[in-house]
Length: 461
Image 1 (cartoon, rainbow, N blue to C red):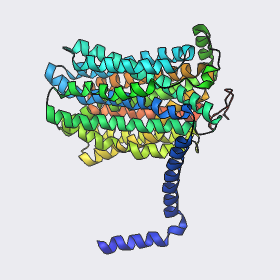
Image 2: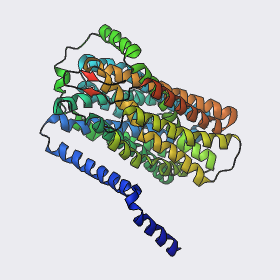
Image 3: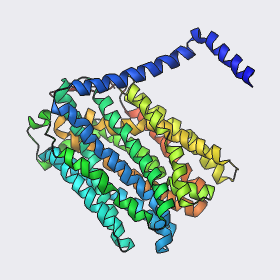
Image 4: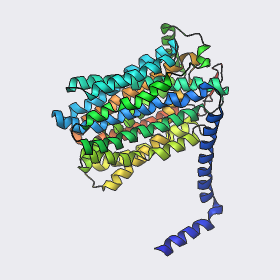
């Protein structure tokens, strides 16, 4: 065995001049240098606009935690209140409905009255909804609390990225690092999801049936420092210098963008991606419990092992986001997620036995390609391509389409699981990714947008 691996390693060394090993080494070097360069750039910057980027983006981590923590809580809630799987899964749908409402309303308001006030009040809504959920006496009040949580998450995703784009534009005179700044924020969101799965599994194992209340209320502790830091933010000068449009003007301008400025195509791609991403994410622990026949706590911890691949995948996206066209990343990610999900769906649908390791690897592969591509591009692109006066509106509309996709994904999965089992539900997610790849390839531009301080943009289609 040692001789085999020794010979293999020797062959690799002798073949390094062919480019494979050298390419891997250069990739790692570029990743490390890029990370250190961005950290140093942020530290040396004297502008509050630049330092506001991670503060604003921390809300995305909190939102990701809130979205994932309910999936861990579904199994014990079902047991405690003797609910059917369909009823308890509706909590995920209600959360996504709240996100749709938050995205639609916050985008228009952020372009009308500014970004800072909205992302500040948003944190208070996070905290209030978490307390309400933790002390809910029945399912109806819990559903209302999760609706409010969804509104808060939707607001953050609709407003934070336009805020970051404005801040970066004000600070660096329209350089090409805005995409990477937003990719770093989305990279942090992976830790929110992983924390929810990991903490959830441990709390359920230690506290028991009532642990779901602790989990849903834990968001308050995460929101407190965010409230403190966001209260010190200032509005980005690039937005402050604009003359805000009226709500009627915003609606008209957004209609034009949907029809003629690629926003409609990107919104549809976002819908298809979130159909699979939020669909899988909200049911992943419960799915693993069903397929592997494990406990709720084990399902949550198994979900961590599957989801952890999004960390290196997101680092790949950070490295490539300003080097490779958004379209190429998006198409590759869609296809890379579609293949393993379709394979897993067919295997489960036709009762082909797969070991737990193979199931985990297929799900992990789907997560990896999604996190390295459309998970970032579908969020980043709308605020980049849009003119400054409708930046938040465009982001809100695209995110609202994504939330609608999430609702369709969770609902479609629940229906298909009832009719034909988990394989049919997973197959739905795979087909959605295939459609997303086709739309992205056909309708999106090849080059990255270039947004100047005045809001002019250039993108070769």
